[in-house]
Length: 225
Image (cartoon, rainbow, N blue to C red):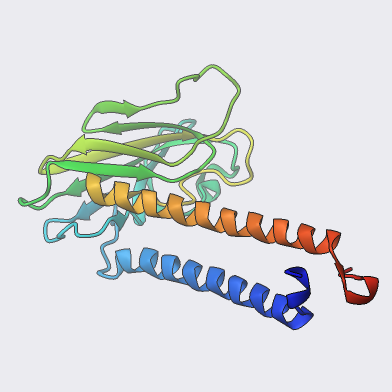
């Protein structure tokens, strides 16, 4: 009886509404990410002045980082987000990104650096202190997930990110890291995880729904497919 209450139009409308909701929420997240750089706070020649930034929201670290390829050791500037292929001539290379950030006097002492999922070998140094490196550096495993690295903010902070790419077609900081207070970074991360989990749950529910329709016959012994 439950299945017979549905018509083709009802099913198609439900699918359309669900897909429309997914697109709308994705647009909201994309707009939220773009507003993080609405004040034109971009890195220039490896320097970023945040002395007047309130840190109410995380900030994407976009702009011209200093970049030093491992094979030449000559420092230049490189746009982030972007590939290093324009300098290394190949995506399969390694190098070091560096940015120096000037903080406001009222900045929270506990900030956080969020690394994107790059699937490259990554090590991070903040203010001359190694804060992250792969556990199995000798193993031939090139995979990274989103990392949140808390650190104590100084008046001037230098962040160094070393990357090594051996397998994928794009190497370098193809997605920008972001910086913010530890609490806001963590809240945003959990919100994104919740959103993705909800979308996966909805898709799984639709899969079960269509399996149910496939196995259930309509009136006059007409199958759904």
